[in-house]
Length: 283
Image (cartoon, rainbow, N blue to C red; front, side):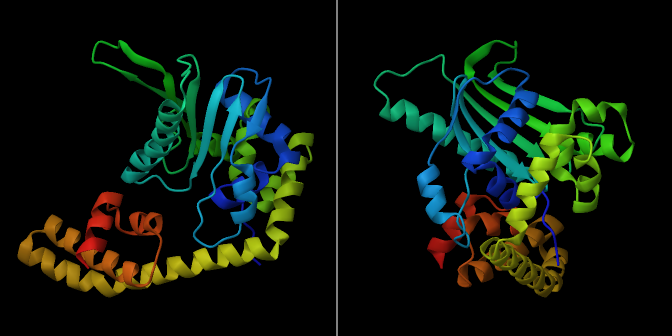
């Protein structure tokens, strides 16, 4: 039976969104941000509890802390559109507070932490992004994105680096069951994390959701294979890039007809949300 590691966004958030596991999440965030968090509250927790197992329902991890609001995303693959999509999530949180808050606090930080795979272990550990101009002058200083290169931390494990002990909270997330078991014997927090992850993997509702996701991937792969020959043929006639775009549009149309979620179609075709919504209107 397949076991889902924390590399899967759903598995990671099912563990971290439990009130009883806030100390695990707090330790992880403090490691990434390199500071202490004295207070932390999960936002929209009631809504999430009701919807956590609904197929296609987005599961958000948004926190209200003493240093500001923190949004955490897990990116199991790193396609170009991921940066735009994740930034849109943080912008939505930022804009919502400004629009509804009469006493907007400019000192409140809005932080997104992206746990990203497929960046390559030579791309550094954590890249921090802020809004600045060409002269490195900050436009606003409370909008910050931490892009955590999970390949870097996985490489620590595979190379048996001495740095593992200082980065155990990040190393544990991407490990498979056998590897995580080994690490859990050396660290109490990892042991607790693994225990909670095992519980999630045993939940029928969670497995039903993940099976649904796997089915969608099979449908996607089937549609890609079905459209590939047509796309390549069109590519020779119209130019490779145009042909590729036409193929993606055809795949998107078929996925829309099957009622697939917009995020899923974006992941499949590399099209933007705007392009897909326009295609939906046209059809």
